[in-house]
Image (tube, rainbow, N blue to C red; front, side):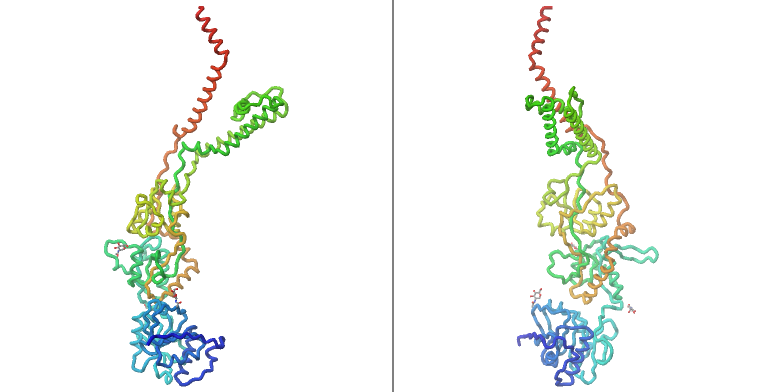
Length: 594
Ligand SMILES: *[C@@H]1O[C@H](CO)[C@@H](O)[C@H](O)[C@H]1NC(C)=O
Ligand SMILES: *[C@@H]1O[C@H](CO)[C@@H](O)[C@H](O)[C@H]1NC(C)=O
Ligand SMILES: *[C@@H]1O[C@H](CO)[C@@H](O)[C@H](O)[C@H]1NC(C)=O
């Protein structure tokens, strides 16, 4: 028979409590079951009833209950239904539920299940059966429930796998069993990537301990649910190093319960093997702080065309004013008298110039202004030049991956992160790719300034701290070269982890108390304490910054050009004057006569 589903929303009196229901009870069993459902509603609210199977009393109950009911008589939905987490499942008999749809199974894994058993089936068998399917919230009633009112409820962490509860007893039927796991193991494994997890041996007790902002969270969870941590070191082949990619893979293959590392979230379409995000980070590049501008270029930097233009205009204005006030007319005005005005030019360059005799007050004022502005400009340029020589400016920072080609930097990257970088089309020779993420981190820790490295903002916080030990910082965290401006850090977890909700609640609780932030803030101090990071200055010694003649190259070129121009002017003036040739002729004449 083709399965069919009837979704029936019983609107009725929406405020009606189950206790207020006045229903027609056709049998004693139905009445008992209704009071059981009522007890369950009080234990924990449910808003949907999902009834598997048809030939039993359950399907006839739904009309009496003010909740949505889904009837699945064939036992399987084979469709991706989005059931709410507050669904109560009723099963007409052992194995009436034959759900095969993977997504539906995941959604219904933690739902409470109530099974109506025929007399001859042992509760033990049922519990074992569901435990194998990793469904743990199971309760059973037998067909003689109306006589004894006994509910059997599965319990995994105890000797006898189920508990008998009388309907009228004051005991809860479904327990959150994973809140106390009675020492059951939680399989985990760490990628030992500091500062996320760091192993050390306690000096007093000799015990091996693990700390770090990732390790701490899992350690606390294990303590909280009274489990034991079971490190699956046997998965690691001797002599090999594993990375978070291996751990993610093993968690998705059900070899680990919770991985003590980051999960590979890139290109995952769902959260089946990822936990709720633990941290929000960004994943950008740390880039070497650019080199300083070479001394020889500094002279050119201070010559700023707009400033020169303004100075030139002021100079012309002074020349015009001087010409006019001296002659009280524009008669002497010519291009050369403005541009090569003797007083104004000398005054402007801070040189002495002949002060006009018998000058009027206005002329004195103008000359005073020339002196004052010459003082201003020469002081300004001298101060500018000297301070830039003492403290040279930096070359511009990188703004995008295109800028990389113009620099000497190469990109060091792990093969996993390379997948994310592919969209930027960098050319082969600019890349240094590491197959193993650990090798890559090791390389990054050397602070080699020929490379730029991808790093998450969380890890960067420790690098930033480490740079405080250096004579000067070597890297900065770029917010324009990014693999991912918004990156989530999740834990790799097993697909059917039955205590996923507890673990995720634990993550949120730790955040509530600000513990992750505290752990991250002190992670560099821990790394130093455990000698994972050396307490040393990795910055190369600064080159001896003496000045060389080359550094004055542009200054000397300008000086030489100026000198050349003036010699040339002098020569023209000298050779062009008629008196020069006359005197030359006279002296020649005298020599011949003698
Ligand atoms: C349930 O949710 C999934 C994913 O969001 C969607 O693909 C699917 O169509 C939904 N099912 C129904 C019945 O709406
Ligand atoms: C925790 O588990 C141990 C068994 O490993 C058990 O003896 C102990 O009672 C449990 N603690 C609590 C608080 O239940
Ligand atoms: C870990 O993963 C890398 C690449 O992802 C692989 O080459 C290596 O064999 C894996 N190691 C183990 C022990 O599986």
